[in-house]
Amino acid sequence: MRTRRLGTESAPIRTTHSVILISVGPHRMGIDAGALKEIRNDQDLSAKELGCEVILSAHALFGVNKLQGKRLLVLRPGRVAVRVDRVDRMIEAGAVRPLPRAFQGAERQWYLGYILDGEIVFPMLNPQTLEREALAALSNCADSADEAQDVSLEVVAQ
Image (tube, rainbow, N blue to C red):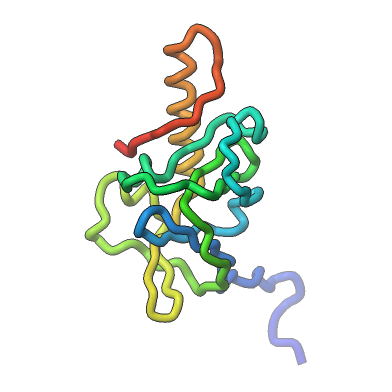
C-alpha cells in the first residue's frame, strides 16, 4: 500500500562522508575525499610539471613548523595542490558538526566543521577556501612579476 503520492519523494540525505585523514606537523585534519582529484608522492616537482597552477604549503598556511611535506593533495579540478606531511587513512564518518564558538576569524573559513572518529575529534578542511586563497596568492605573485612563473607558494593565513 502506498502512503505517498508519486513523484513527491525527496532525495535521500547523505549521512556519511568519505574523509581522508591527513597530518600537518603534529596536527591531524580531514578533507572530503570527493574534493580530491588525486594524492601523489611529493617528488619536488614544480606545479607546471604536476599540471597544476600552484602548490600550497599547508605548513605555512596553518603556521606549523615545516617537517617534510611528503604528499601532495591535488584538489579538483586540478589547479591547486596542497603539500602535507602524510596521508593517514580514509574513513567513513557521520555528519559534519558545526565548529564551536571558540573558532573565530579566519578559522571559520578554513574549516567546514569537525568530525568524530571514535574518540578522536578533528577539523574538516574547506577545499574551496584553500583553492581561493592559493589562486589569490598566485595572482598577487603574477602581478608583481614581469612574466608568469611557476611558483611554489608559502602562503600564510591572514
